[in-house]
Image 1 (tube, rainbow, N blue to C red):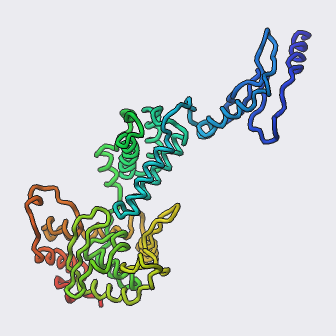
Image 2: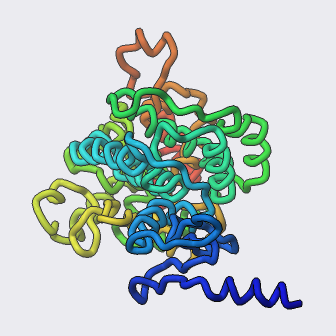
Image 3: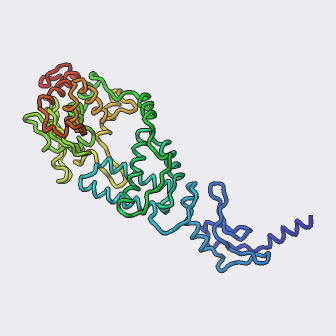
Length: 410
């Protein structure tokens, strides 16, 4: 008993240093190291004393500055449950993401990249910094890191978005290679791949169809306000999506002859479509009721918000889609809301119904879909009568008449 008592007294006699200031994050351990318990595990950061001939001797200034510096270098990784990596010279993840986003910002501001796609890139870079740490050196990333990243992504998103997000992650690191920011491509490993096609098929089979039947669509049109009515009709008449409507310039419309000539903002692919009489009337009314533009940047747009700004736009930290918001409210008002339905559903509906017209080449032109076939290389134009036949077919399905000039909505 006396031996153990003497041992305890000798340990208590060790003069441990006090914290250099009240908020100092570390505490002295009996071994002579600075310590901190993080996520249930004790970690050590430098020494306040060295053992000399079996006794602890304090180091100058108790070594707290070096210990604090080491803690700060590893804190983000440890508190996030990641294994800290040895810091070295080289481009880190945050720097790569900043370079990548800067290039995308320039493209967005020049009109070469949609607001929606920029928003997706920003979410991916935020995720990379969160999962890898902002000081993590790019060359230090390995297959295990990307396997963990994919597992995290899979808990957030379904297989379709997961596949798209994996592609966007790889585009960030490809950008680093192509612009000489990093010397070699990171090794993603065998697991960092898109879900198999069989997974996508099973996922799609579980989802309800993105479809609203004609009777309910007529209720939507009848209940919508002026601007939303015009946008819904453009979605059903010409397959326009949220960003398409928000960016639609007045110069793309020939309301006298009833035509829309409007390259897709997303891809720049040409798009041409004859307009129904109902669509023309709704657009004219929307233009009459449109709020005054907040500034000259919005003057030429067909649709504006209540504040005179663009209906889909990027803010500093988020993206606002008033088209989606207002359409969602309309669905709920009529009791038609369900998971997976949104304004973009109208584009699905147009394609689904138009396919029965059996002219996929004409449908692709209306929707702004690229045609990679050899025939498209030689085809110089598509007769307007073919486009008219497609929209007449959709009109007949929607309003119960094949004549788009005598529809059922005033």
